[in-house]
Length: 351
Image 1 (cartoon, rainbow, N blue to C red):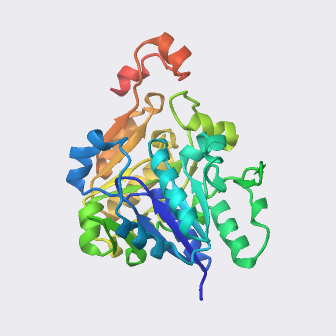
Image 2 (spheres, one colour):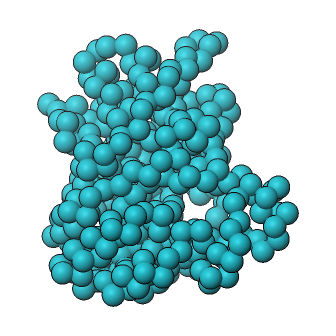
């Protein structure tokens, strides 16, 4: 029997780029993975309830907990992807899983990366930073009966002490990673208090028609309001740009559309896409325009990266929207509060 790993996503959507990538990495290396989307809202629910229930810890019935425990049973490790606003919820869920399962329970995501000491009071192990390699190494160690507490990129609790392993180096060539996991027949979703196997109808209900993706990772800035501030403290390489090749991005998009053809918009959710070299953007745009006619949205644009030729090239390829980060027009606030470089004229030129 193939070893099994379960990953639980706590967000109110099922886009979950990180967990989907880690799941695919595990599958490529011989593991069975279960992706569980614990509390997604329908698309209308995401809009109408986001602010009213954003910080409200959900309550699950005993029958749902039983279904969840059964789904996780037999896993080598159960990983929870945790954002800070979900910390209380993650703790309640973790206590229940620890009570009913023999599996290792670990946390990953930006919350344990930001507040590792706090999280170690709750859970046996946490993954700091990107988990593409470190989560796989943990699963392999557990499968092989080796000492998993030496896994790079993880902290583990052992009695009264915490084992703080060195960081796992970042994957420099993102093309080495697999496509996002869209084999959704292996996924489970909480649909109205019942844990159901994902199907096309449930994908349309909860995923909708926007594909969330990333072409590049990294940002040279260390702004105080951004998690990149913490990531750079962890590994300085987070400042550097790492990216897929245009060929990889197009091939992944073809794969996803073959599995889920109901996409009408692509979101490129990079932190600083426009900082990429013009020749790379030009190559991306040409390949995208040749193969796809799906409009796309670039969500990460820093004013200092603005160049009209980049905008025009992407618009010609199908870009219909972008999001520019303008935190303040006050120079003192930008310099002394946000620690964000402000280039003369760039903010207004970008706008």
